[in-house]
Length: 271
Image (tube, rainbow, N blue to C red; front, top):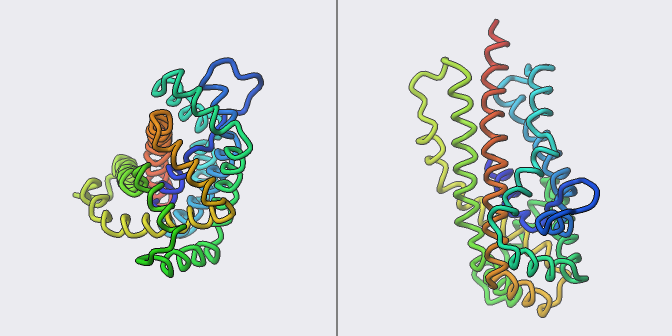
């Protein structure tokens, strides 16, 4: 759950509702940020994560009921709509326009392509291990690229926001699990989620830095400085906050319903 939530909020800057002509500033921003592409990646990640849940929590016996619920829960149109609505309600037209102005450029589109490619690549555990090892080798050094990435992480509060999102995502999953079955007794979903905070923080730092160092490796220092400058601007901060909120809303819904689905599949297997 941690990695998926972290991935989700970190993918930041990448969503777009499938559709025809964009009619509003938020529609246009969603197209520029490639919402439909990232949602398709997220859907694949969600289906893979659900297979792990089936194996670990249902002994591989989730069957067609669980598989069908997982597909319904990870509906890409619904996922994209939640995030796009948040962009529309949480950002001003001027901040949307400034965000479009940055990302609808060769550099902006290249950044999105690099982020998407790195996200897909990191789905391979071997690649993730390599990215983590690269960060571990640089951590604590005065490497200039690491320094730039660290400034980017701080500007967007990527560690704190991702940890909070991951905790909330896990809590929603446990709430769904608890509400879907009476077999968990005095299980406390909040305590269970919070108990994972330290491990989540360490994993999030490792993943965030590994991801960013890998994604932005092809960028020149000046290009990364330009991205950092946008991120520190009022529009960049507004976009970052709106994307975090949109992804949070999306994953709160997904995680709660996934917990319910696991609980009900457990009940079905006991009949």
